[in-house]
Amino acid sequence: MTNEIWATVLAALKSALGKNSFSSWIEPLEFKELVDGVAVFDVPTNFIGNYVSQNFGDQILYHMNNLGQEVQRLQFRVPSQTRPTAKAKATSKAAEPEAGSGAPLDSRFTFDTFVVGKPNELAHAAARRVAEGGPVTFNPLFLYGGVGLGKTHLMHAIAHELKLRSPELNVLYLSAEQFMYRFITALRERKMMDFKQLFRSVDVLMVDDVQFIGGKDSTQEEFFHTFNALVDGQKQIIISADRAPGEIKDLEERIKSRLQCGLVVDLHPTDYELRLGILQSKVEVYSAQYPELQIADGVLEFLAHRISTNVRVLEGALTRLFAFASLVGREITLDLTQDCLSDVLKASDRKVTVEEIQRKVSEHYNIRLSDMIGPKRVRNYARPRQIAMYLAKQMTSRSLPEIGRRFGGRDHTTVMHGVKRIEELKALDSQIADDLELLRRALQE
Image (spheres, rainbow, N blue to C red):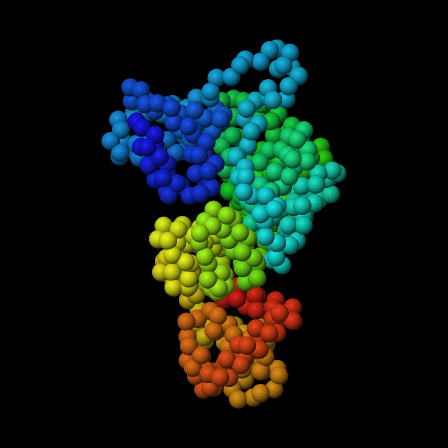
């Protein structure tokens, strides 16, 4: 089997497994040779080799054979190293079991590349504080939020910073899925003492996506005892999940209680300004890679408005846009953006109606829907009416005249004035900005 064929297999696996699983487990594999039906790979640790074999082995075999390679099984090996002396074993921490290594850290996920905005400023500040090291001030730090809001980025950034500031610290970062796999493997191979020694000897334990241990009774039991042992030893614990501790399904109450005893921080969905800042930060990087490309005014603002629920999708769209423009040798205009990202934009289209917006806004401001739509111009009704018009313009594909007709037959210039007024006020009045973001999130659920 050639390296070109393995590259084709890698592309198929990346598409099937997703970015996180691929970078954690498949990327570290180094194809060496195919001999007598056995595909041989070098791996950084035995743990990675075992995990890939158990979880992805069948997929790898399928893709290889699908490309005409006769592969019966996979072999994973750790490259031979100089055997350490007895003295080195006794004195070197590096001679501890290689399972002490955690999941690979993404070099791009640092504090320098994390764009801070109102929705994530508390999480960022807390992560910075933990990354400084020193005495443990809150334990655990629990970060939670939806997909693509920056939890994993902050976890990696903390690990990078700790390793930089205090290289002597034993920092272990892994996913809850990996914790569970190591636990099951230790049970099967009767190496529970090694498992306990490993996890109780760390200085900083970081567990990503802890919601995955919900319902796994034995894993929860061991996690509970590991947690207590580290807290008692004044060791720092950092946890992430997609929801608050009390909302994780099938998680034991005693574990929920432990997770809530430190600092619990919510990463909110991004607002427009933060999304625009993320795009501007990415453009600086891409402009160095593609110096010949020009990006027209309004493109970033368009993307920040249209792709609002997931930062990963937003960043992926920009990557695709620059790659496409480079291939066709054209300036990145709004027309090119809409052509290149038509599928992404369609998937991100809001399926919200003007009527839903009107109802949600009237409920939020505790006024009758008929009063908001009706002719009264008193401030108590006029401001919510303008907010509803603004959201209708931003979140639906309706034209200004169509929106005006749904607001008691008002003229399109009235709608235009209302939209412009809210644009001005949201920059000056933090309460209106907060209301807009709250209403937007509620309508997108």
